[in-house]
Length: 546
Ligand code: BES
Ligand code: MG
Ligand code: ZN
Image (cartoon, rainbow, N blue to C red):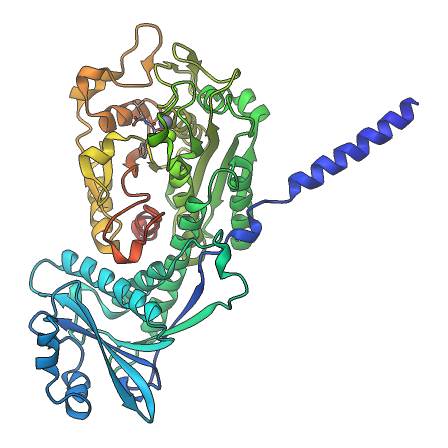
């Protein structure tokens, strides 16, 4: 009899285990939506390309940015009064304008797509962002009109937007791929329809350089990785719980030869990660503490830690959010997702640094097991905090993650990234990630990287004036700032500072930039992949030329 029970238990165990092995996200990680976009550099001259669409980027006043002769050909062979036609349709080359004319070439219909870049004599970074958005609008237009193949001529200037050509190509490719991203996995009406395939050819000008292809390849890697992050962000919490997200990290580590360690509740208890455990305690979904590691062959390289908040759903916990504020809280794992996207890029472009990714993954739910207001918890580094609001949970899991980074890896630099505070939306809206740091060098680098990549950051003062806001009567610190201090984004950063002792550290609050950014063609409607382009570029450049 006893033997039989053992036998049944074994079978039961095997069933549970095999169910667990199946990831419920594996089949839906598809960031191309309903269409695939193939981007190549053409070696033919502009008009020699046999395509359905010819794309012209124009400056305000209808000046061509490519070679004049390419643009003038439309005038000569198709529309002798082209400029009048464009003017009549209110197309003057201002930024945001786009206009299409149809012609016949070799007995086939072809489309001429005119896109305005605006004036090109202001500041380079502003213009470069406009270029990315124009490319985004062009891609959307190609899809709207089902123009399956098109060629785009790059600006002919020597260093347009202050960028050498391969860097320019890289930006164009990233913007095009990002514009093509769609989250349509759960739309059933498309079933049976075949996926549309688009091809965008980039004509860089007469000269062909090897580095152009490198620019293209880097652009493909960065654009695809950013869209991978957006897919993770967009997946709802009933599909993407901590286990499923950790599974994605493991798959990515396998694919790219990275080291990956995943800690569960038991290991976290042993280590004393009281913040991580308190936040996850209300959920039936087990938390996962994921550590990724990228190692370069070279010795004595600096170590950078990227730490990302991974709350797969933030209900607020016992300090429950009102319904309206709870919608969209599937995006509360955007920091962790950004770290994964950055790792995809780092693993492929192999910078001379060691990079550690630390992502605490939890679900913040109310229940009889949940942590409460007034609870006092102890973190990995020994410090204690009084929980005054269970909805300020991001900083609690990050506290353990930052401590973990310092204790086990002694990084030279830590960048943490989190959808941390609603207050951030009031400070900077959707256009800028908030940057807080006590290190000017890192801060300057991140801000400059933001301008080049379009993944922009703006500093908020991490001034001592805000430090006392998180004082507690009963513990070392409190998890929310005293209300008379306001500035919730900055007081949250001071909380985190308690868990970084040695490293140069910068904190990024992406509460506003992670999703729902209005009016940017290449970002679409939902997830944006905020931080992927920024952090990867920062890491790639950190130890260059050394
Ligand atoms: N996930 C939220 C922050 C957030 C809010 C991100 C809105 C994106 C949009 C975070 O966990 C939170 O709830 N923060 C609280 C902190 C407060 C209780 C001190 C907030 O911002 O209200
Ligand atoms: Mg949250
Ligand atoms: Zn919260």
